[in-house]
Length: 71
Image (cartoon, rainbow, N blue to C red; front, side):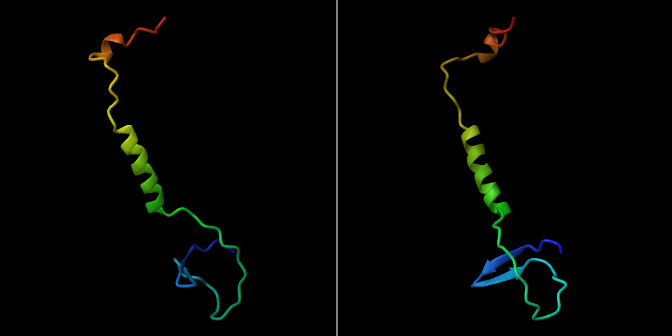
């Protein structure tokens, strides 16, 4: 049988897609939480915020030192 994605709301698991089972069919399953897209974006937003910060190195022309460690 295929995996069915559901949301837990108000004490009930609500499928996010049509389920092809007869009404009142008893089923057994193990809930496995999955990350929601908004959760992933929230984490990425934090990372992008950190990466977007300016780093003040004191160097005014970093490009001038580009080849400094090249053989």
